[in-house]
Length: 123
Image 1 (cartoon, one colour):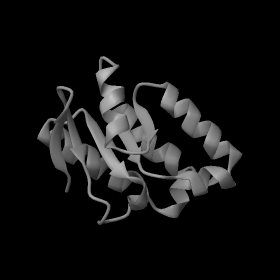
Image 2 (cartoon, one colour):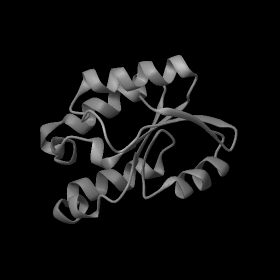
Image 3 (tube, one colour):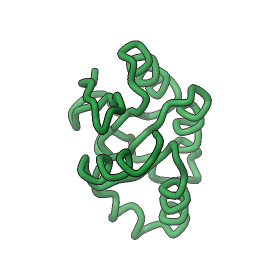
């Protein structure tokens, strides 16, 4: 369960680093349902909460999870340092760069970065 915060007038559900790992669509749908129920427009999930398979694009786990958020028009932020994963995978590095250019899926270092993003967008 996450805590609802308002960041630059945008309702954001922020999850703690401890808790069930997000390993696929079921957990993504649980997060989306929780966020929708609380009125959030964005969900912030610490990188540590994602199963390791999320960071290996060949498993398609990241695509499945992110696709659920897109389908339900819910923004998702993967929060924290994922440099060890991106250093090991040029494909993941490119994926992160493309996501960060968009308006619905972001990989960010901290909540300060999220505040800046939400301030500069019509989220």
